[in-house]
Length: 375
Image 1: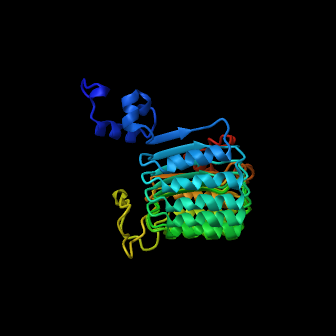
Image 2: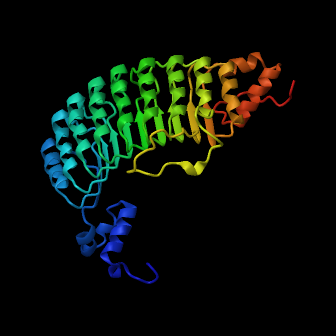
Image 3: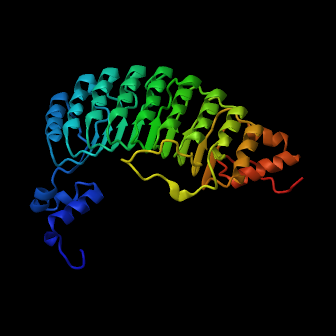
């Protein structure tokens, strides 16, 4: 250990550095001395059962802790309700808390419970926040409450799981206001099996105006999205600093024109001057963004269009992206679309050969018959 140095000989500041790197409570439990130095900095807990009184007592203690830096609580299925979850708002008073992950799946929080969680915006040191609110009946009002997180002063990484919550157009419009969070660099939104529709997706597409957003992951499975929604998402290529994009549109109603629009994500955005330079990724969490920056081309794009209405034209458009010089990574999934039928129809034509080349070039998620002889 450090060239012969024992753990007990390591200075306190060295132990703190190791502990912060691991972001785990393991080191603090080695002995009484390490607990005295490190105890309470990194907490991860999954209680067997919890009630509002116990939760209130524990969160009040954690909120008053000057040591607490990272906290992970798994409270899935505890039936806390909106009254029980209000205690978690006390965590905003922890002065050193910078990383928080709360799993509150299946807790019947409703919109009132989410309003309590929105108070976490006042956590002054928080830079990483993950909230799993799947199946909590929050609706549009709850999604609007979460939009208040745009006021969190240092938040850089945000993950929101709002699957199966009856979020519609109005809720999506509210979440689009996260574009005003000037420190945000990584955003993951899981809105699976809601009712966004094209109007909701068009509102989310305005996230391209987030001034420092580098990575965006949108999971929009089962949201009644058609071509107009896909075309709106294609506008994300105009984002100033967005480099990594993942869009999951599985089980929607996107057709050829939507797929063609999404294929343009590989194009160099308008106003981008010169060839892409990968070392131009912004690394300034606290500095001001340039007033009129040139947009950078995306570095990686991953599209899932499984079980939509994409046919041959959409596949051909996606194939053309392999000729781009601006992408390091590009992948798409067309499982369960009309492409298989088109392949059978055109198997004796040159067009089918091009389709086969596209399927060989990318990952083929289904087993199509091999076409080894050029017509």
